[in-house]
Length: 414
Image (cartoon, rainbow, N blue to C red):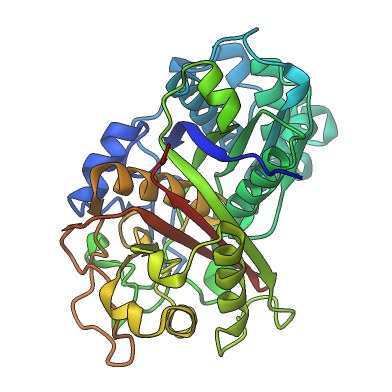
């Protein structure tokens, strides 16, 4: 069966470095840090005191006030990003078959923050004081369901939860659905709002967070010799994928083409990753085979780059397995150095960043890379963005539980 070509026609996001595409790109291309002291709660007791918070955000500016009050913050973020993407794609209601439109949205933590808050209410005041919208607002499928309601989507509507790889996995589901001609149009992406004290504490006790806080903009430090962990962040990224035929039939602007995707599981450990990098390399090779391109065709790789001593090394090992000598001719970078780790939303936001990099032929930098680790010897685009011809790029994400995801995108070629 002839497989449909899959293109990106809409993008939207909410992030620590901007709540629209223009602000986001301006900041990441200039190497601006979005890491700040936590304001959502008192961080005195925690060894980590920084986060990538979304600022200057009033949900009622984008969503009906009454409706927004019935949504967890992660739902608000996702719906706002979806509204942006729908507008960016220049879609209008009634111009597509709602049964041929799907939704696949990723999240790692869903509405856990609201649940923790409501538990305190329950413990102190009893069940009669609970918010009656707690269940509907905190289910993992609250995001996909609210997007379906907003745009009248009546096709498949699912939530993908595979840790930090959730939103890049959602792209894979959408890509497969369109290629197989089960859908014409798919919303994909992810959303997280996990900056609540109990969630933050659980990451702190797991020792995955950077404990530097004297200079907020100086951490995390992906691939740096002195890296000591990541920084938790919040936000959402939503993309609209369409079959090429569907996009052309309505005269859509095409931002990029999704060329291939690959996914594996380490089957190794819930937090640690398989140390040789072989499973990440297999996912990357699957993506290359899916895209029917050679490793030497890839110009730029956006790495997971969370600033962890072990995981950063695993990524480099995987890249060297796949790209060999060509790795020395390529550019790599990691914008988590600027926005922190958005968990299940990170892959989608970083995919958007990579599409913008292709559009602008500019590799965003990896900031805070002052002392490169001697064994991590790739071109990480340290500190300053790099002008480069980018025709095809790869985006990689690793998730808790050993989830590996790799997606290849390229310029749309008629």
